[in-house]
Image 1 (cartoon, rainbow, N blue to C red):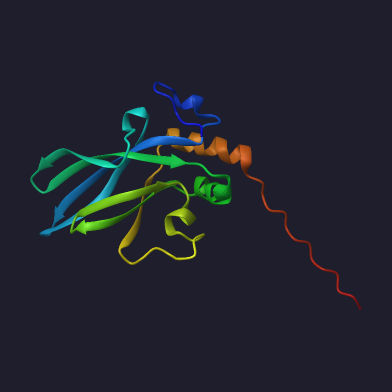
Image 2: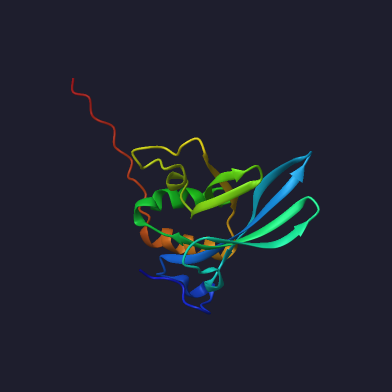
Length: 167
């Protein structure tokens, strides 16, 4: 498997099929209730970890910021049609799948660029009701990486011709 090496620049992403990413998550108290959101997606070797781990970055009045490390984005040829749709979206998105451990405590377990993968549309079972998919704007360096993959592997479907009716 190809992966991004320490110190590699976004321009060197060509041919790479997996990169480490981090998530900046915020938990905010609004009207007495805690709500979570994805504040940003970060990429690079410094977000590499053996398993997902959460680090409290800021704990202020009514706002907590967390950095999650240990996730990887993977590009797979079977999702190339979905990736092509994603880069045409305005804005393109990164999908984060997780569960709420408690109100305002979203715990991610999957980060993907494919809506189908996020919703498990290609699996025998759909996600259960406790799993949630949230999206965040795709950073430019991840967009360029995904765009290169789509340009290398996407083949538009050929329209099926109309059948001739026999008279």
